[in-house]
Image 1 (cartoon, rainbow, N blue to C red):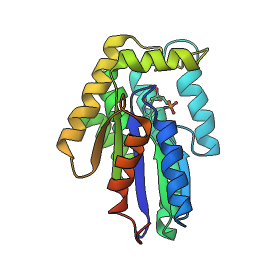
Image 2: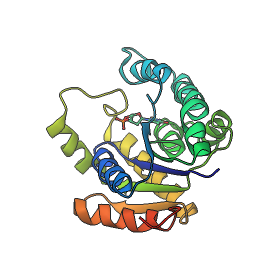
Image 3: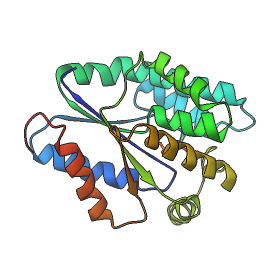
Length: 209
Ligand code: TMP
């Protein structure tokens, strides 16, 4: 496909929103058409699924949770992301397959490979061209969230061990795919991280930005 698919991944509070904003501003200033989106919640259906999976009260079976994320993904990729990539746009997306592998596969202990297969099926095999992993100690992530939030979603509210498994799984995936995944220390300087991300993306752009 002619477009470029960029995803941002990392634990809660790692600064994905800030880095996404800086990256999108830079791409747009260089004249690229950018579609900014996220999972869960990148479509009307996704907004409803996001509310259910993040804020529904009461217990939810982990496999049910994994399937809701997969349902959101199936609809989002087919109706938003693929059409954008076919047009030649740049898609900058907050969270994708690696989040399912980390949160449901490792966090919920459903198994990384099984959850990955489910996601790939949902997305009909679509993988990002570049993924930025903002790596942060979950304790630091929690401190950042504490200063910004009044309520936590179902995943954020999980215990420290859960978030440690999530972080580990992200790093393991990054070690398996170093060409796709750029790992950044999210505790570092915000503008230095942004510059390193730009440098990596630069090589993938259709025209020099
Ligand atoms: P965020 O959009 O505010 O980052 O939050 C979405 C939450 O959903 C976050 O805690 C990570 C979680 N999540 C999963 O558990 N699995 C997934 O596949 C995705 C996309 C997100």
